[in-house]
Length: 143
Image (cartoon, rainbow, N blue to C red):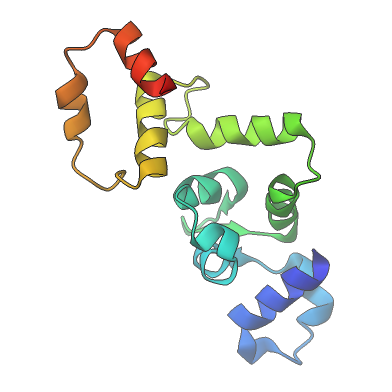
């Protein structure tokens, strides 16, 4: 993880090579756009924004960034060796888009739209399924 971090820091700040950054990489920040660009697991993920929200911190300038600790947490959760309870914890955080501590039907609808590639489309599904009971909607989600 340390080698990947240092490589990403060097790629995002090439002008800093040889300026002591390598020895100070642990205290360096990578902005979310750098992580998206340099980490294919995030770049091509339909939950990209949610990953950034869950693992990064918000700086005083309002921009999201990753320190080494946040980056390590992200890699740990993506590892096949991560415990299932850790993966489940972060999956819940990813799916809880409104961050209210529960998975609502709106959260699950958004998850399905992201997984099917229709998250950016106008939300006509809600209008089309508004007449369905919650049991009917659950049945649709289970399919």
